[in-house]
Image 1: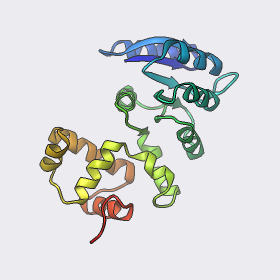
Image 2: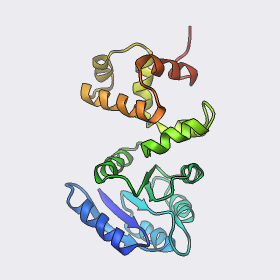
Image 3: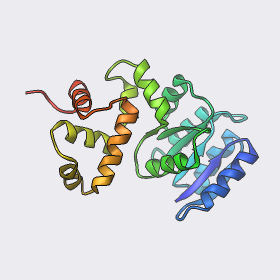
Length: 210
């Protein structure tokens, strides 16, 4: 996976490069320190994923994100920022981001976010996901950005009464993967039991009541 790092702090870029280059299958192909540079390098290098800070000189992160997506609608952008304000989260998803993670996240969490976004999923830092659901009304746009497509499908099958093994067979994945998805669903939506997941799925139209 070819990655472009866009952040105005050289020390942070260096740390991210060192972290990512220790991971099999990851390659840092470029670094940008301004929004304009991020847009230019994204067009020139065509990376598989862009790690984008929101606060950069010139055209800031949101501006750069919109331009990157305008030039390449398929670009996968993971916002890496210190801002934990829900309006920031809403704005970047509306601008086309695929993920939002805080700089305070552990290395393992960042790598998980990168993997999720690279696989075509949306990612929201767990603590922010819970706050989004607490603030936004049921069925809002924010709800839709919290769960990845695969998590949504797992939740739908749970609501239909499938066991973990049956879900695994249906989606051609392992039982442990199903359990991981269930854990993430619970964390993101604040749901602790299977019954709560079923109720949520019914309320959000993932399955139809008789």
